[in-house]
Image (cartoon, rainbow, N blue to C red; front, side, top):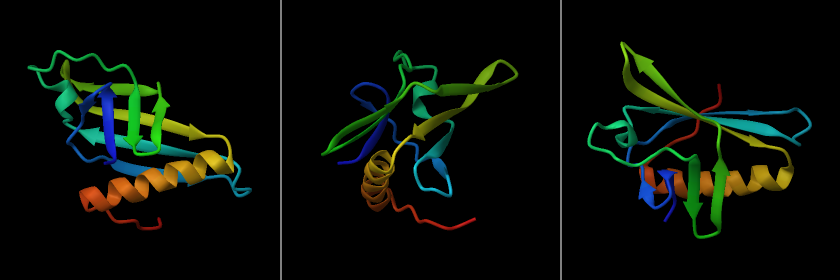
Length: 111
């Protein structure tokens, strides 16, 4: 089962908007995840955001580049950036996203 976590072991049910960029050479790329009103920001949540963990049957992909957005002092969204520095990292990420998309009804469209 493919899932996204901000705190190890705690799945985030909110499905993000994901934007991908890739170098023309194909050797590097970035994925920007934007979560609107994720449950990790709920007042009842006592879990700390320790990173973003993309977990599936192959293992996990981790990024520590996670930022919160606040409006009038209240948390509203979370943005995480995953940087991929090789073709292997890109391929691994795409395998995760295929699984995650299937399980969450996501589609892909080119900009």
